[in-house]
Length: 166
Image 1 (cartoon, rainbow, N blue to C red):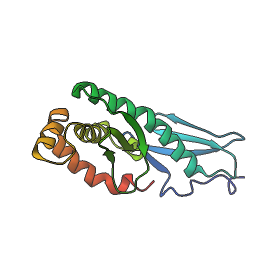
Image 2: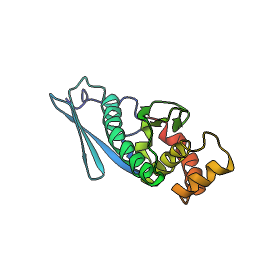
Image 3: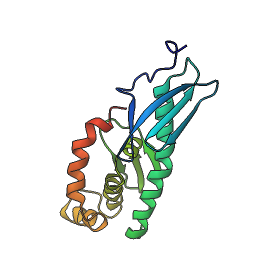
Image 4: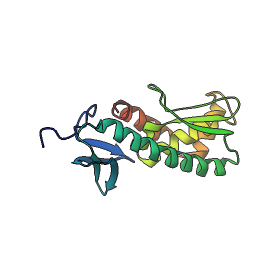
């Protein structure tokens, strides 16, 4: 039975990042699928033929939708402007985008990063509601929303490779 147990296919290890913390993935045989976070563990209950990596990605994606919308909303209230639409992105090279129409997209993989980095990306994209460029005025707006923006930007760049692995 153990030899046939579901494996975390596509995961580089038996760990996954969530909100800046490393969670140890524990796979349990079950007739039904369920992913449950218990402290620093992520328990995946799954049938023998389940693709555990897909289940974990779906779990992260579901949490990303709620978490990123919440963080974006907090910063938008401080800015006094809200996006006209919010969606998650599956981009392979960027963390967010903002269109002229005010549509903001944030990469779901941000849910792996610490909240400080999530807030930086949200502040960056929301600042584009005021300045749709990367001018000094834009960066001043980002700094007003996220006082440690440059340090957070550098930290995000250092972490990017590991966050994009999943």
